[in-house]
Amino acid sequence: MPPKMLHGQITLHRLLLKHSPAAKGPSPMRLPALALILSVISALSAPPAAAQTYESPEALLQALYSYDTSQTAENAPSLYSPFFSDQLNARFQEDADNTQVGDSGSIDFDPVISGQDGEATDVEVGQPIVIDDTAEVEVTFTNFEPVTLYYTLVKEHGGWKVDDIANQQGEYPWSLSALFDGGR
Image 1: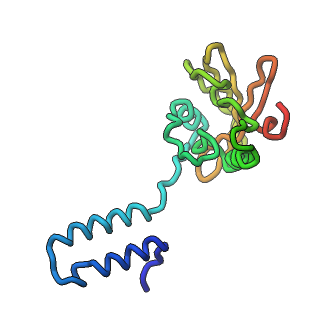
Image 2 (image 1 turned 90 degrees about the vertical axis):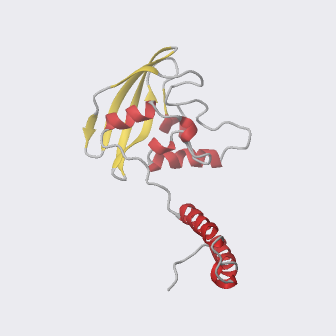
Image 3 (image 1 turned 45 degrees about the vertical axis):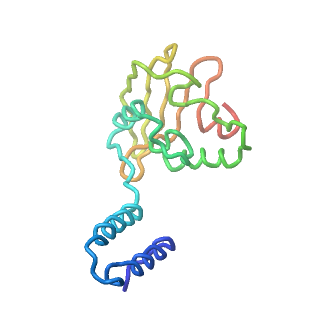
């Protein structure tokens, strides 16, 4: 029984059979081209690599703060989707789906740096408090001024993921979950 193929692969497969060396007679020049085409098809049809898993809350947060957001897929719900839990990614996606084109959604700033501009420097990840598959971690850094964020992490898919972020400082404290729910 032949392997299951996608429509585009079936069409290409038929094209390859039609123009293969076996259909036209032996031709040593066609074999390298056929091998190249087959290797491209194989690479394109391979499943994507599994997402990185982090065995400790500290490893997750250190990776998060050293992450280059340009590596995130263009259609991802958030710039930090690889680090966010399924639930948090679903909240970002739902918010994006319910936001009109040209408008900003419920989260109109970068929650990882707690601002629209700048960058986190002098990042320090606190000692996590772990209870079963949940952890609470304090992260401090500088982004024009000292910032302290509180992370709620969950263990899913074999590693730790961010499930909520909160900033309890200043005049307008917030958490992602409260912002998605229409509050602060």
